Length: 283
Picture 1 (tube, rainbow, N blue to C red):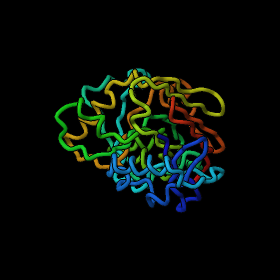
Picture 2 (picture 1 turned 60 degrees about the horizontal axis):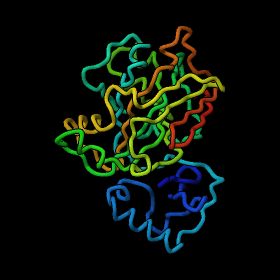
Picture 3 (picture 1 turned 180 degrees about the vertical axis):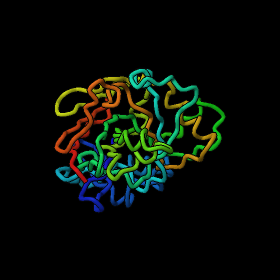
C-alpha cells in the first residue's frame, strides 16, 4: 500500500494510491501520523474496508507532495553503513552502528527546495532507505523481532554539510540539522508490499549525472539489526524515522569533491519507493 500527504505546506491531506488514482483519507484519519501508524491492523482494516465499499473520494494529485509522515518524534541516523561508502571516505567498517540524530524540523517534501546554509562550501548529498516505525520497539530480544515493528519504507535524503560536520569540532549534529536537510517521500510504502528490504537498488543523480548507484544488500548492518540495536538504547515509537545510511558516491568521497552549489538539481530513487527531485539554493 502506498500512502502520501498531498497539498500546500501545512495543508496536506492524507491519501492512498488505489485504482490508479490518489484517494482522500481525511474521512478516516486527520493525518498519517503516530496515532494512525500505532493503530496498526485497525488502521489497515478500516482503510481496506473503505476502499472495498468505494467511500474514499478521489484527490487531485497535481498538487505538492509533503513528507508522507507527520508528527515525527525523532529521526535516528546510521552513519558509515555501506561497505563501499566507508571505503571511499577512508573509514574502517564500524564494529557497531554509528548513531546520530536529526531534528524532525529538518523534514521537507520530496520536491521542495533545499537550502544551502550561509557560509557553506561543502553541502553534500546522501540517498538513504528510510524506515518508519509502526509499533513501539523497546529492548527487543533479537533482530528476528524487529521487522514486525516497521510500518513501511520511504526515500530519505540525508543532506549534510561536511565542513560543519567534520571540521568544526564536536559531534556531527552541526552538519546534519540545517533547515530543509531531510526531504522525505514522495510516499510511504507499507512493509508488506516491500517484503525484503535488503535487495533494493539505491540511486542518485546531480544535474543528470549519476553519482550514487548502490543496493541495500551492501549494508553493513541490515534493517532488522538496526531496529533491534537501537531498541537497546532508546524507545522507538510509531512515527519515528530511521535513516539507514548511504552507499558510495557522495561528494566527500570523490577526488574533486563536487559539493552542491545554488541551482544544482538532485534526483533520487529507490526501487519500489518512487523518486525525489530537489533544486538547491542559498539560504
